[in-house]
Amino acid sequence: MLKPRTRDKRIGDIYLLAAVVLLSVLGCVFIYSASNYSAESTYGDGFYFVKKQAIGIALGICAMLFTANFPYEKLKKFAWFFAVLAPVLLALVFVPFLGVENYGAKRWIGIGSLTVQPSEIAKFSFILFTAAYIGKKPERTRTFKGILPVLGYGALLCVLIILEPNMSITAVMGMLMIAMLFAGGMKIRHFACIVLPALALGVALIFAEPYRLSRLSAFLNPWASPKGEGYQLIQSLYALGSGGWFGVGLFNSRQKYAFLPFSESDFILSVIGEETGFVGLLAFFALLGFIVYRGIRIAAKTKDVFAYLLALGITFIFGIQVLVNALVVTGCIPPTGLPLPLVSSGNTSIIIFLAEFGVLYNISKEQN
Image (tube, rainbow, N blue to C red; front, side, top):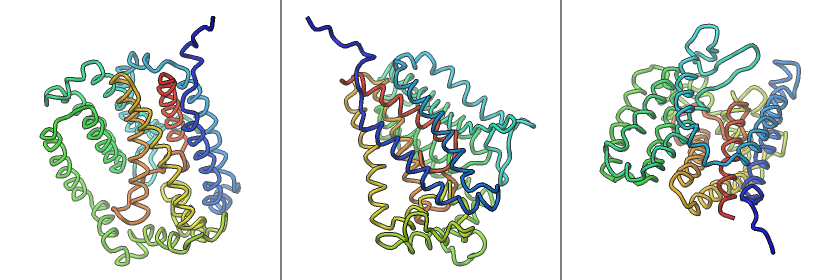
């Protein structure tokens, strides 16, 4: 008589894992292409950023293997732990000798040569907290009082992140909060009560800081300040425009030669477009879209609210960051610093995202 397979032996969505790993490898290739010149001139090693990313991928895959085999239901027990950990870590960036300042912003905690970006951890903490809170009593989303804890926790994280300052992650966190509440069953009138004040607050935050107004002006007319605030957007558009249909060829980008700032991180998509062209970008976005599709597919097949919101939250944060990064690079929204998930240089980001996709794969195992 055949024995039923245990849960741990089930195979989940292999296609999702394959796409995630492929995207991470492609990220390393394009990081090298985008950064080899600047890394050689600054650090004397053209592989400087690639080596750092490879370490992040190795650690991220270890984290993904762990979360892929750790029963996701048990994550409920850690929801409050992460809910407390995230604001504490965000607050530590303001502590002298711990917070690392770069380009006028304190967004990292540094211990020796090791740096961690707490906002990346905060995004997952919010997803886990919201999924556990609504999953326990799904009817909570039908009343405004019921969604107040989610709004309060999300607002706390947003306040701490905007103080760094980091408006891009704050905006992403706000979009994630609204998307998860809406997916959890929030009523339309409550949705309007949240979105309208949030938009007004966003406008107020832009006018509150001169550098944000400068970025808005650069977005509206980058040629008014071609060597100032408009410089980065102009160089990004140059890169995308020179790519044409089929690109200038892999490793042949011209904008990476100190023309395009942050070409290995926030604006790596510009280099990808320059080297692979419009056709290459279509294929690249097909891969990104495939990952989002598999995530939504997994969420749609779940049998409990906690798993449903956890899967959707991970898919949402990936998709939202991809969308915002693409809109910034193409000049559709004001420029802001936001990495392209699994592709841009940045260890904390790739480790957390790979761990999250391990959780998503774990959820898919239950469906088989």
